[in-house]
Amino acid sequence: MSETLAESFGRLEDEEFRVLNAVERGMEHNEWVPEEEIPGLARLHPDEAEYHVSRLNDLELVERRDSRYLGYRLVAEGYDVLALNALAETGSVTRLGGNIEVGKESDIYECADADRELVMKLHREGYTQFRDTTRERDYTHDKGHLSWMYTARKAAEAEYETLEELYGDVAVPEPVDQNRHALVMSRFDGVELRRADVDAPRAVLDAVLDELSQAWRTGYVHADMSGYNVLVSPDGIRIIDWPQSVETDHPHARQLLDRDISNLLAHFEKRYDVSLPTKEDAVNRVVQ
Image (cartoon, rainbow, N blue to C red; front, side, top):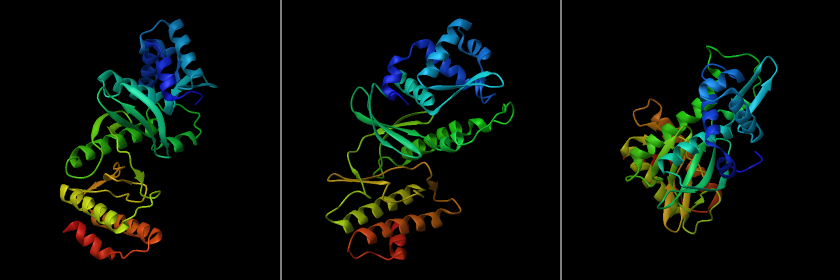
């Protein structure tokens, strides 16, 4: 994208948010929303709609196809703007800062509400596969073209709901708000465990196991534990990235917990010369 999300958002007119919403709704029936359908969906005169959708295309918030017919579809940045606009309207985000991290499955931005510094996580699950797939037909009944938006939104919803259940009992970010694929959370200025050089590795491991144990008692298994998903600071730790978590009554919960513990112990064994518990002892400590 040629501009930052904040810059693009700030340049949009009210009519362009209406056009983005129109394209989003139109994609429920077509992979490429026909240009002639956009004015009705956006409740704009055709000339106005044509002007604003062309501008959105220039800003790389939608993309255009002119083969079988002239049509438009949302790209990830356009979906970002729709979510950000909704969060701004509720006051959950009053300021958007820079991009902290760009990943395959999410982008993280600095942001704030009226009272405090926060972070906004934009889920990207499914988008890469969507972009790598060329489709030249309409999806009037089969809504496979919506899979990237649906997958990303469901991931954000799942993570938000899990954080709501865990927060207060487990060292996780506080969930603030969620819209579409965007999740707003409290900010914790820590370093990923994979990049941290901790002075007391066994104490950090014990702290993580304690939090996983509390999560188990609350009814959840992280199910994707690694050095990427623990933030470490002098103030303590936070366990992040919960969209794939499962409840403890899931048929594979114990198997997923075993894998989490194996990944965690492997990280400490590789990085530090320190006495570690066996996997069996560590798992028993979590589920006791």
